[in-house]
Length: 224
Image (cartoon, rainbow, N blue to C red; front, side, top):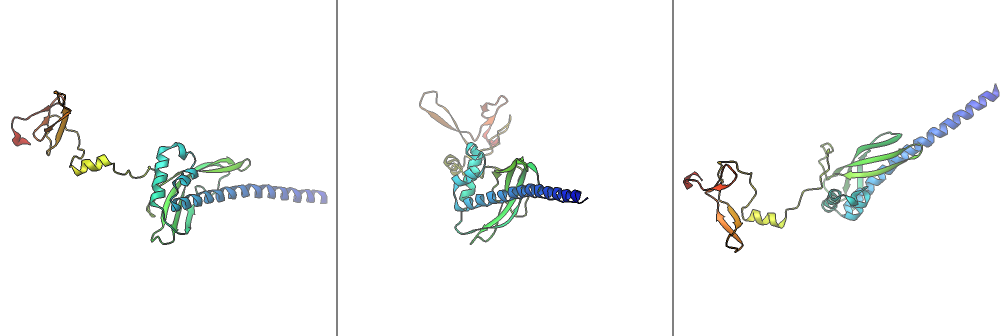
């Protein structure tokens, strides 16, 4: 009787130690996720684009990821100590691999408002073999009261020099015209000069699109 009692106590202790070890691995994965996110936002605050790219798995091979990392590092750069306000982990409890979205709110001394971002996190493995944490994507700064985006874009495109030149000349892009429609305002049409002297410019204010897509002059310029 006494021997059975001792074996039962020993078995309970062994089970307790096994469960404790498994829970420790789960909590270790949670800690690793928080540490990776903290390191990421610190690199963004320093404006270190290459470090941000290195924090995200596979970012070196993705032009979209590199562009977003550069955008974040440029726009979120600020001198001062980084403070983590809150981290919502990608998963609260998991004994196997998961794919989820974490949310972090952080700030730098001197900034009037906190910064909120979303991070897509992947955990691979299990509590027996071990859990590995990887950051897959990080969003741009979002409003504190909005949900995490379903897709993370590369960041707003910077206007090109050619685009700025077109806007300065008033040559903005317009919707394509259908048959019988007229140009709403004056435009310039460039075509090859048959004499071989480069490009010829024409006043297209009184031209319309014909049924086959060609340009034909209307009978009277008054319809323009």
